[in-house]
Length: 25
Image 1: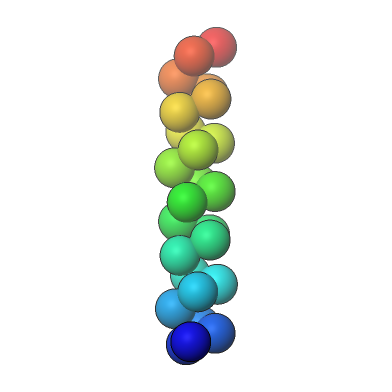
Image 2: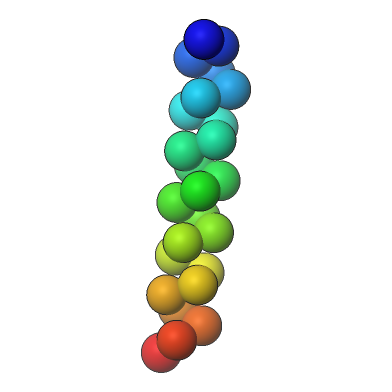
């Protein structure tokens, strides 16, 4: 597994989830 790709994926997923939560405020 590419560690950089995995870390980047987690960052993108976290950013997306944060945006979804903020949109609900």
